[in-house]
Length: 286
Image 1 (cartoon, rainbow, N blue to C red):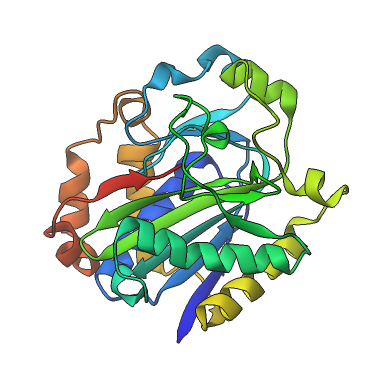
Image 2: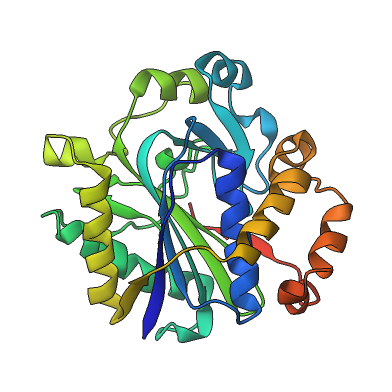
């Protein structure tokens, strides 16, 4: 099976989240193939989980550091996106050989991440869930949907769904800035999580890690990638989502999208079928 592979330049958090949702809606409408997008953030951003309180992080510290704040369409805890690789996958959950449940699809897609890390010589596995979940910082939450290397969490993933289709996005840190993490999230136990630089005892370019992940997904999921671009329709929808949702304080602070958003999307024929379906739900085990 052929999937689309999209490499995006570093973008603001509002655009990254808008593009991820636009990709999901286009795929629900059967206008794009299953897609893996690899991207970065500029400026660094903190993304809040769908249901997470705005005050869960130190807002003042984010502003002083010059970091953006955005709310994801998916659940889970807050993530600092700074030195990392972020991936987003849109796919029909019914393609998963283990079933289309949230945990089954996490397990399926995790196989690609694990195989990608193996390309770097890292032996990763799925974490066992923990009942002791801090309320704010995603990387300090130990759940059954995340990866670990030597017992320490390496990144996190979250899902949003629309009927049988899913968006799963997640991040794997190349490097962690302890001072910034402490300022934004307070006291955290750095022994619980890790990053690529700590594991490899040296830096790894984004491009090299991206290539390893691509090979890992192809191998583990028995797929082939064809490099492509986002469609004009996806970018137009993303622009509307930035203007009326992800770029607004109402969404970031209170999870309220502009009522005009649904009208604008419905007017776009390529996503009308998606919008008239059941509401997307933010789901996460991160």
